[in-house]
Amino acid sequence: MLGIDIGTKSIKIIELAKSGETWVLKSSGAVGYTGVSPDKAQTDEDLNNISEVLKKVIKQTGVSSKDVNLSLPEALVFTRVIKFPLLSDEEVSAAVKWEAEQYIPIPVNEAVIQYSILDRNETTSQTSVLLVAAPKAVVEKYVKVMRMAGLTPISAESELTAIARCLSPESGVSLLLDLGTSATDMAIVKNKKIVFTRSIPVASDAFTRSVSQALGIDQKQAEEYKKTYGLSSDQLEGKVKTALEPVLRMVIDEIKKAIHFYESEEKGEIPMSVVVTGGASVMPDIIPYLTENLGMETVVGNPFSKINLDPESAKILVSYSSIYATAVGLAMREE
Picture 1 (spheres, helix red, strand yellow):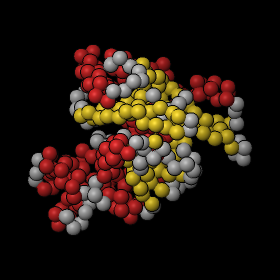
Picture 2 (tube, rainbow, N blue to C red):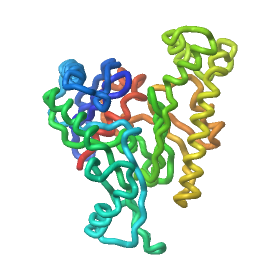
Picture 3 (cartoon, rainbow, N blue to C red):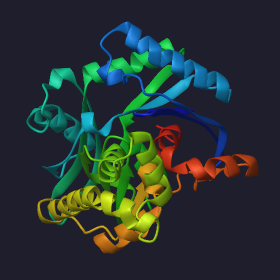
Picture 4 (cartoon, helix red, strand yellow):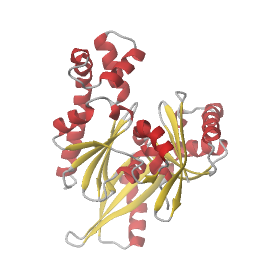
């Protein structure tokens, strides 16, 4: 199965095969892409430009599968946990159909709606259901791009759903943090199931802009400084760290707010650990900084931890693993 992640600055592709209980990497690749994203495409020409880049990376990687699972930007997906009385599967299906309207900010007939049953609690007589909805027009654009590239779309899901599949700890409550280019996405997962999500428009680009402004350098050089010095206090007299901190504090505040909301409003358990992915997760010293300021164990997620890699692929992919989590999670989707 193929997983394709169209990001703000690149397109990532992963092809996996399953051998018994083991996932095997068949091919992988990434290509720079800073054109219009499918959701912002206005014309067929816009979509065609993306499909041509897709064809290029497919040819370069030599993938054999045509079936593809694709991701939708988290900011365009509405995710909500809703509570029903104890209901059968059939009753949940009917209830979601009738109740969805009040939980999503777009008309039901303009949305693609999916749901999954998280939990049936006999004590509280409640069924918890994760409701996920996306604008139909957006989904159709992503599907069209894949078809134009000669692929067969099998499923579309949010980036966090895919990331949770390959990065969630096997048990307990954790926070997944995707530090992307234009957005920071977070999900609280309980026993590998997403129970809460939030997306904020502050991420890697904002870090770069802050370094550029503080040090009076252009964006390209600021990007290099960010990647090289990060949150290190003893590099460049800590000037890059000083420039990054105000933006990172905003992200940390949002994480704390999300956890507080989940704990107080949703009556959920506090996450015990944070798993970080995304391009900005490799900035020097960001992990100890997050550990200290969030007050919980923080680690960089390895999306290939459940994948059987040959030594050569492992050597190539190890330094790029932070950008592949969504694509790996998509390729691992089985249902």
